[in-house]
Length: 108
Image (cartoon, rainbow, N blue to C red; front, side, top):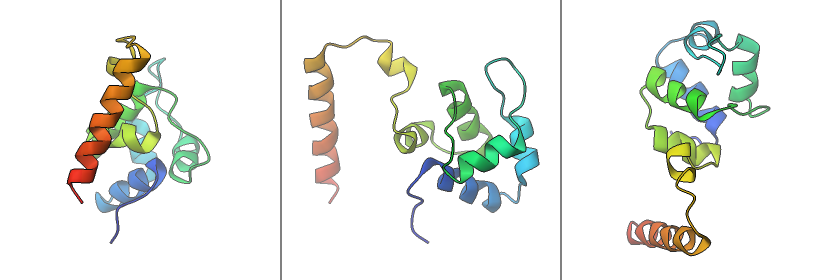
């Protein structure tokens, strides 16, 4: 089986692998206000119609599903706040991305 290509596919695949239904997973992932997400919201995420609304949610998916949070942030297409809050200058961001791409190229 190939690796999922989207955040939603990864969440869906791992949830099913753990034999967890959407209602169960949704009850374990909280919004910023402390309320659980709805099964419909989770369904929308799994079908790539919506995205998690916060880093908190991405981290909870990682914890509940035993996934690497950095990989989920990558699939989500965002940098986590512990990176963005550093307020790096453009040159530092460019250098980091060049180093990241070099590391990827070395893996080929």
